[in-house]
Image 1 (tube, rainbow, N blue to C red):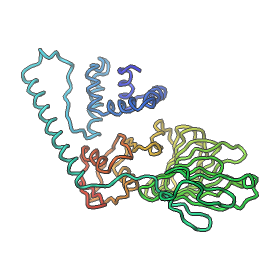
Image 2: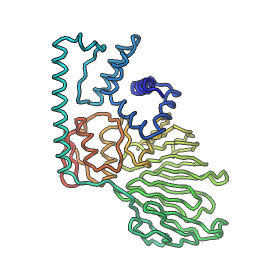
Image 3: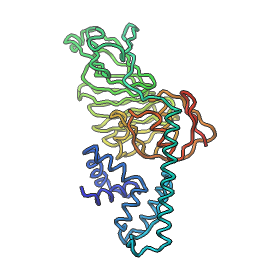
Image 4: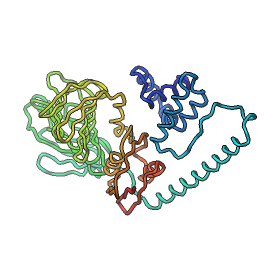
Length: 396
């Protein structure tokens, strides 16, 4: 895809004027390689997008509209660099005043660079919090607990004829015997629980796969006898083996989900204002005691604490499962949402002094980064805080 086309699509996406076919085109290009994804994140920063628009002269038909929309985006991003709009005058025709402005701007940029360098050094000195990793506790049917992160690879237990094995540092698998598959074995219930700063994967007895995010748990039978049903708290990403004769069911904090075969993410943390269920592929029925709906690919259901139920088409639905691939992904996320995710993953406490700033944030960063790297990004967007041990104090 030509660079000009890339810039046009990203501009349309950020300003809300992109069609579904154009969004699919952009998403396909973005996901084709790591390089494309990095270029996408770079171009979509308003100050870079503004440079692109200026280099294209924005087109006579919508130059003024483009200028105003990008300036608005820069305000939303709380950018640190102010770039004036101009129509590519030839350098030799620039006035002395214009040259002085450019030189002054260069000095401002240098001062900002020095400021951010000092800030990053300060954060590194204050914070030594490492990212989370593969940590979980397995509770067997008899109540015995196994610390999975310290257990060796191999068979961990026999649960009613089902072999429980640790496959690698972040995966536990259940292999049912022929006797269990025929429904003659004893059904026991196991639970995998991740702490703050933990994540883990589970292969269920039918071959379905589940990824557990931090502070989450999955309760499930050691083999599926009459129905395939599990219970989730926190957040889990599911890839379900199709079986028309036995739909897969998930119960999560008052949400009931019926699945035939699909990929989806369920987020049902008790400290979140909304419980969300997002379909990445296939279709599911999701409901509560008051409402229900059938969701298809790229749709998301949100359920509030009072039971209010809504369904939206979410073209960026893959962002809901970005954590599975080791990424924090924020698209118009407020500061509270971001800080709750950081608290769970880095196992830190967050405290607010005064009101939480009402702002929207965009962007991605790897979950393998140190906490100070993430805080540095927020600080550059005018979020003020101090760090006291294992506590982040957000300030006005």
